[in-house]
Amino acid sequence: MTDRLAVLPQYLVPKQALTAFAGRVARARAGALTRAIVRAFIAHYGVAMDEAAEPDPGAYASFNDFFTRALRPEARPFAPLGLLCPVDGAISQFGAIEGDRILQAKGHDYRVRELLGGDAELASSFERGWFATLYLSPKDYHRIHMPCAGRLLRMIHVPGTLFSVNPTTARRVPGLFARNERVICLFEGERGPFVLVLVGATIVGSMATVWHGVVNPPRPGRLREWRYEDARIELARGAEMGRFLLGSTVVLLFPPGPLAFSPQWAPGRSVRLGEAMAEAA
Image (cartoon, rainbow, N blue to C red; front, side):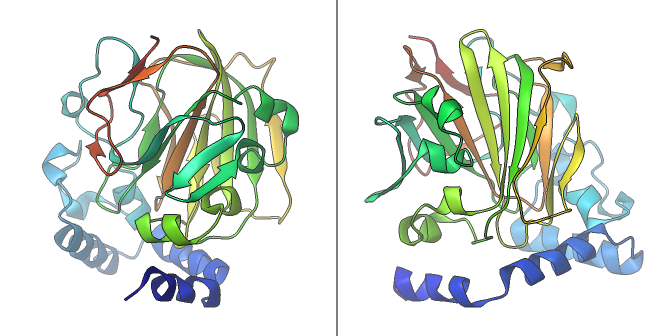
């Protein structure tokens, strides 16, 4: 099947309704049915429950509780220096932002301003900077951690569509990450501002942050913003900052300046929370 045919159903299915239904199922505390769904999911995707703080599949009251499960503290040691990889997942793309354009896939890019909800002033901070796009598969750990210490400045919820996120849609859906629903988290760090963008997708029931809780739903269909300049919310390097309740993709943006990504990094490579991502060159 060609990529074009594989992506065609994405334009036809009722993505919002399907996602809302999936969210209700994932939140349900349905006893034996929930336990059966969790066990089937583990078997189908090969989830490594031996890494979980609670390895018993029957201990989770809802699918969301299972999906956002904590890991054993020793399961993900942190690299001693540099920026940490914030998630378990796979590298979609990474590297320099060319002017104001971020590489999505070969032959496809999109503008920083589009990703950041149309905020031109915020986008200008990252022109000619650096980016990394990391995809979380169903079997992965779905909490998101800080690549470095940072003070929270703003959070923006941008409404959008809910295309599935995978290598095929990245190749065939123009501006995928700037079209899907997303939560933008702006921090101030030692090297200046940086952003983590939590990108939704089909079946992604909701996204949450540690300072706000569940951001979506609600989905009012308009951009929403929260400002935290006076709240003094500071998160340490490696601390949890959010989670996907059914997961998708994280896009990181860093400002211009010397930065060297790990020589082991390459598109398509699997990565784990806490491994070295980059260092200031």
